Length: 379
Image 1 (cartoon, rainbow, N blue to C red):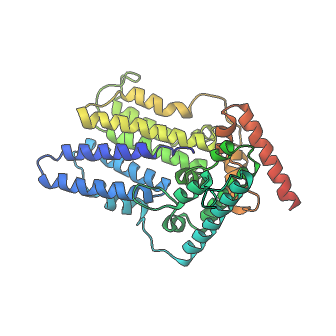
Image 2: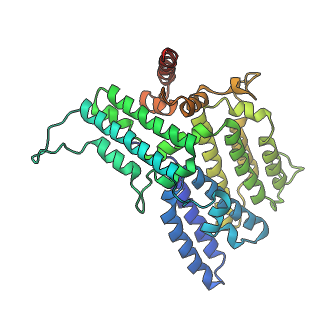
Image 3: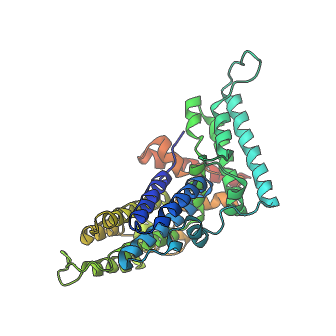
């Protein structure tokens, strides 16, 4: 069973920032007590957040730390867990409604279908008490919806906050998992498709975002770096007549230029998310250096690292900067799941992991897409 993407990293780094906040407020005895409360709330609430909410909350916390480096003012609303969460995500425990219960029931039925398919495809001897043994699919289905402290299941609240279209898409993905189980030759191959709740929700995030959305997130993180370096008045190595603070502002402004979207779209959706995560890691590292040692990392090096994914490489096609024609098949496939739930297709995320990160993955991905399109046309 696959592991989740970068969310453990985000939680650990958030706890580091809380530690820095306590250290820089040693003269106020109430701060340590408050941070302890925030940390407890963070650990308890983190599993209840959608992956997109975790990223948005962390990015806001990181921005607050960068502003402290710039102004020496770290207002409580930029670090208090629930105040910050309400500002960027709203209340994560929205009331349950009829629509959420309906979607929860539909998800449960889809999970039971996967469990039945697994038992039928890979029959096992019964236990001494005559009961069927617990399968990997049974364990997976339980974990996928389990909601206790420390778990990351798909709750009614998460389904409600996803919205009706995204919730239907999630259920369609579970239907795709059922098909993959039925087609698997061995139980080990079937187990591969039993992905975690976080990975399933990541797929839904991808289906809801456009390349422009992901580039906007990238630019926002670079903007946090520009805030961090506001008072770095050392001369740039690359541009000796400019301060390093100016280099970071120039980098931020450059990321927002239209031609960078065309280059960003040369990457598929999963690669775009990886680039945003890497930018987040780089900017956190720069922020950590200042919070620990009151020293900025080399702005020229950081700017080069942040701009590298958007520069160089092959020239984008003329139509890539705008319109649906320039969209990758990955984005179009995910969109189709939201609208044509009767014919879900295997996502390149699965294909890349299952068949390997080579041309074979793309070949298998294209073959499955062609087959699904033919089936949809016949239907």
